[in-house]
Image (cartoon, rainbow, N blue to C red; front, side, top):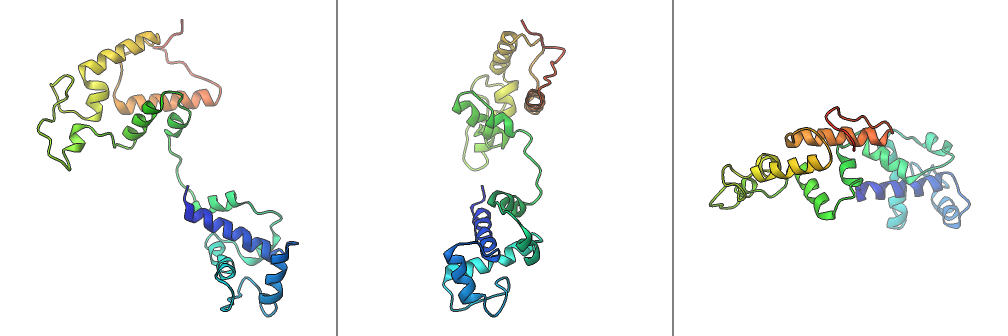
Length: 206
């Protein structure tokens, strides 16, 4: 959550309360003292407290997302969450978000998954970029340099573990690479969420 955008949304809600003249004492007080000569939307009282000035300056925040005074006055309700989303704008959803949020594995597993999805798993090839590493080879097989792809899939010991896991789950295929497995997990999670789980032809249940 972006705290600054959330604070802006909260202040805009206060301005909406003022512009709609809600039946609250502090709103009536602001109208009485600062709304006599001009619209509160354009009012810039220099003698007001910093809190009141902050609320009245929220008009420019609303104008940034295309909301003018007339539209604000016509709003029957105002929710902070909807305004927060307006400030966020359009953005692509993270495709693997449900792999983390809906993961019932141990917290350590989810954390390692989260790190590698961001490309921040501290393998030897990454550590070597800012620190001196004498040996870049994988400590498990010592045959290739250690990176995330090798550590999780290409290493001989990792391959053995994957074969055992897939056999245990009755999935008749070999483990693929990191990006292929993440894509498979995303599609699997999406089909389960939509209620029509499509089973891989190489998978069969007991």
